[in-house]
Image (cartoon, rainbow, N blue to C red; front, top):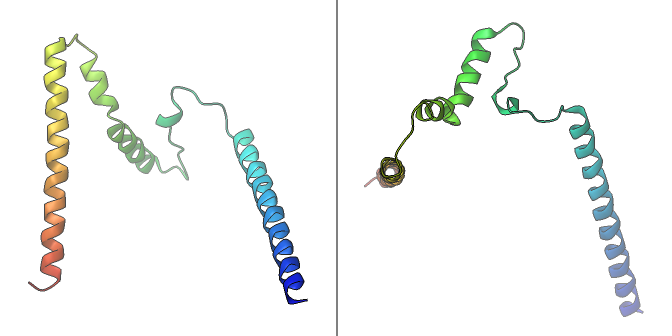
Length: 121
């Protein structure tokens, strides 16, 4: 009796999990489709557009500048103004890689020192 009760409970739990997973998937799909239907198709300016809310032009301009800086848009445009030789490009990329890795190393060391100081040493 106890074994059959346990087996029936397990079957019920599995059925509920399968049903809830199926419902969860369907609900997620519906939400995604409604979100995609409401948004316009992407354009080259999609990631570089900012909505102006309540006539807050300064805030929108600041947000746009942040997006352009994070995506290195201005630097890319400046680099494309003139041709860059292969060797120059290779050295520039190597330098950028080194600077990025060095900065990450310094940040990790500073974080370690802060952690040690916080422990009271």
